[in-house]
Image 1 (cartoon, rainbow, N blue to C red):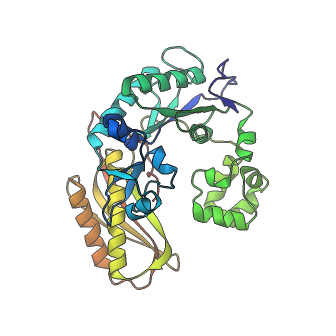
Image 2 (cartoon, rainbow, N blue to C red):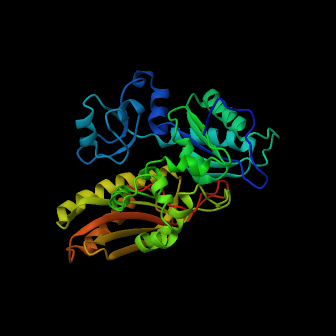
Image 3 (spheres, helix red, strand yellow):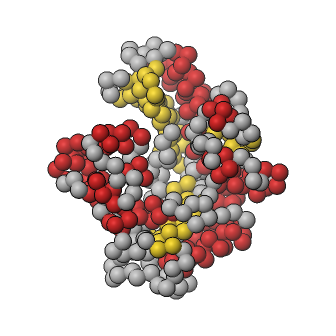
Length: 371
């Protein structure tokens, strides 16, 4: 592993890609602090402060207290009594994102946005002929700071999996480079929770099986992994070895945007489910606006205590206009299935049948972060 100061070439071997993952630092909260000097240096949460409010984003000052996105606002306020809540301003976030993407496209057309605040870039053949992915990442971070007065962290490597892990390594306002030949060694030291796709429940299961780090995972053969993790095994096997063959796709269009919440205890009462639905609506609509998505189908997903999955959907004849319409459909879908035949352990909402204007940049074909 190299830090941002090691810029004497990238050491790419023939046939390896040069991938950068850029991730803005506490993007929504940072835009608010940039635009309101009174918020700078203070713990800030973007979201509603009411009883059903949810944190959409938290500044690094707030994160020190344990405040994080998707957390109920009442919990966040309990952790950080001085927390300042501000309502989201998606127009401001979108404008900053457009500026950032313009910077990306100055260097390469192979840009795969994941959301307003992060993207993969393939700079194997960069437009300016710079040649060094490390140098390009440094220039991008400098340009973002100069043109938006915001900071970004970057990861540089030879595939998407490693670049994304690297971008999180030295946050905020940092950079990490994982060079060819270093991937497996870097991953071996990582806590298993750092592997994308491994959530709290998955990490608990792995801990019970004696897997705490990437090195522990790499020690398991593919047959053992398939026996314990099914279809997820192939991803885990490759990731433990720092392998990822996925290309950066600038032309893939996202098919859906959504999120789901796994409960700490099973829920069955109508009042609890309705309250939980309000939380999910708040967070998922934030994701929808963040992705600038327009869609016609809302799907309610539930997982019962016996792990059977149930879903119900409604499609309208034109893109859903706003949060109020999205919320009304989500609530109606819930009412249609009440009372439930048994308690549930998970609930989620998804917007699909997405459309986009011809002028919009394509979106990656993937869901946003889970709740």
